[in-house]
Every structure is written in C-alpha cells, then in structure tokens.
Image 1 (cartoon, rainbow, N blue to C red):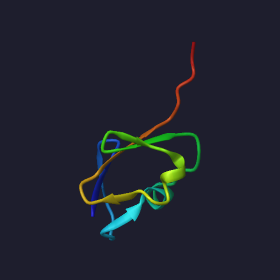
Image 2 (image 1 turned 180 degrees about the vertical axis):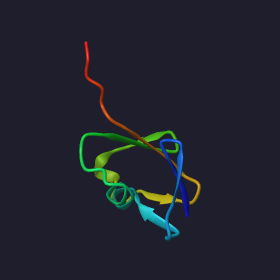
Image 3 (image 1 turned 30 degrees about the horizontal axis):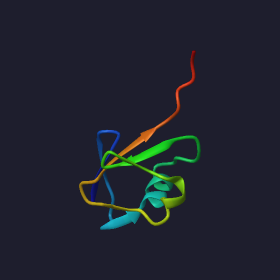
Image 4 (image 1 turned 120 degrees about the vertical axis):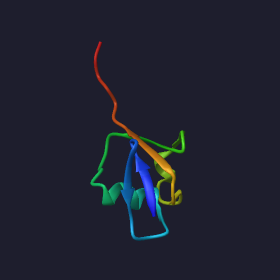
Length: 66
C-alpha cells in the first residue's frame, strides 16, 4: 500500500491500517494534528480511522510564536 505522508510517498506491506498504527510506525507520539485526505481527524478516532492505498495524510505540529 502506498500512502502520501506530508506529500512524501511511503510504502507499507498491508492493505490498510488504522491512523494510530500508521503514526506509531512513523514514530509519532504526541503534540500534532492529523488530516486524512484534507479532513482533520479527532484524536479519539485514530484507532478506528482506516488509512488505505493512495490516501493522503498530513501531520501538522503546532507553531508557537507571537
């Protein structure tokens, strides 16, 4: 399966995986927001939201400043 993460193609051996599994495989822990195909996903839905072939995942870290 090929998924685009922040615009970069990533290959996975499975046909689908949960958003939580994807984030764990990529080493993400805390402190970010995630959009799947341009729609932000609530953190409480990461376990049940499936990522499929050709999906686009954007991982956004908050920016501090002022």
